[in-house]
Length: 430
Figure: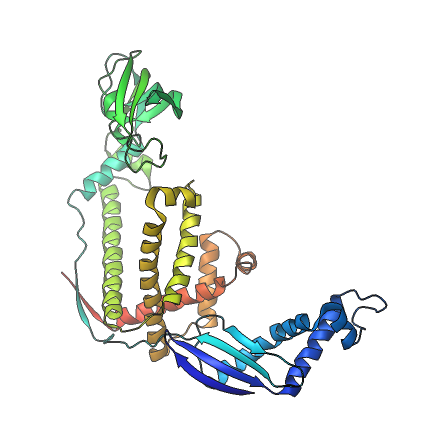
């Protein structure tokens, strides 16, 4: 096999390949035999028809296509190995000339990994804003714990207040039409933690039991149902029940009921431990991010648009799945945000992700950082524990998704490179 290499823009190499006529005929004959195995030809058992009969039945072009499909993976593998190419996408054939008795000529293009020029990535000193535990964090944690163990009692002798829970009927109208799914009977709403339309819960305050009244609100401009976005609405309401929360007293008896504590001081010590761990985690994450952002910003790499487009397509698919889990569709997102705006954002994120990946791989190569079989196995074990599935079952499930094991290995490599960068650079928390 003879090859001629021509470098082209965007990290593409054009490869002219010549396969000796004898080898090309072997490809052709093997393909004819393979086709004969599954094509029904009258008068012949499967696999027993001679080449000329197979040609008459399916045509030379189909046999040549089969021959190329079978041979190209080995041909490309040899070209890549002989030239030490680092390809980032499947090679593709631009043209070919396949005439029996003549050398097989193939023109193919391969997309190579961009060259990364690292800046300084060791012995850096980077200032990072230190995470500060909010002054009211302890009190908020205690208040939250009391809220979790609050009881409710029914109130009948007063109007609603902003901290109440109300049970009420409502029926909504907008522009003279009844709102679809905009009504309910005996709906329970915590007025202090409402996710209703802004201004809705506030107008349920200072209302007596049994009163029928109307409230007026305006749907947000970004409301998911386009017909209602930015539109005024009126809701007919009636309060059926008022409940108020009764918080327990924060004392040693309460402490003994809610956990393995003896006193309130034990609860506070446990909360402080959590807050300290939260601070340590925040400082660690912020430090890792600051180091990595510095290293990637100092690295120079020209990324071809095709790599960004492929990554953007992957991000778009992830976005579709996320929307589906939230009960929305891609079409609704496009209608609300605009296709161009979504894709612009995805491509910006894709460029960052591609550069990050290239920089990580370059550092790993420079520092000879690899993921061992044991480390990969540990990663799979962690995932099995996370999803509460035994490891063999999880491996079988993951194997059904192409590329998932490469993604897990890449994630493990990312973590090792991140640890290397943290260990070899200094952070000043300020």
